[in-house]
Amino acid sequence: MSPTPNKDQQPDPRESLNDLIAGGLCLILSFGLAIYHTAQAGRLHEDFGRDPGPAFLPVILLIALGLSGVALTLRGGLGMWRRRPPEMAASLFSLWPAAAAIAILVTFLPLRALFGAATALIVIGAALALLAGRTETSRWPVTAATGALVGLGLFGVFRFGLSVPL
Image (cartoon, rainbow, N blue to C red):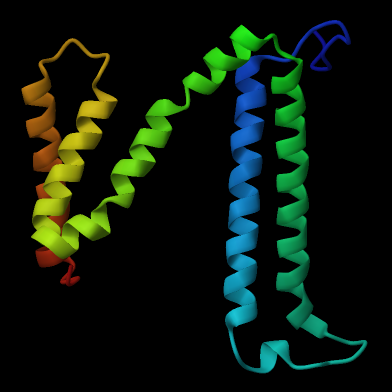
C-alpha cells in the first residue's frame, strides 16, 4: 500500500483534528515565545546592521515555528471543512475532555491563593482522575480518592523532597 492517499479518499477526521490542534499549539507557542523574546533586554536586540550573527537564530526559529503552525492549522481546517457536518461536529465534540482538563489545570493558581498548594493539588488531582476515569468501571469515590492521593504525593515530592516552596 502506498502512503500517499488516493485523491478520492477523504482524510481521517482524527488526522485533521490532530493537525488543527498541533497547528494551534504551534501558533500559540510561537506568539508567546516571540513576546517573551522581544521583551528581553540586552545585547541580543542591538542593531547589528546587515550581520546579525547568531542573534538572528531565535527569530528564524520563531518564524519557522509560526509558519509550521499556520500550515498545520490550514491543513487541519481544510480537512475538517471537507468533512460532512455530523462527522465534523462529532470530531469537535471529542475535544471536550482536553478542554475540561485545561480548565481544571487553570484553576490551580486561584485555588492555591485561596486554600494553599496542598489543598489545590488534592482537588485538582481528584478532578483530573474523575475526568480520566469517567469511562472506567471503577467507582468514582475510589477514582477521586486515588487522584487526591496523587495530588498530595506531588505536593510532598515538591515541598519536602525537592524543597520547592509552593
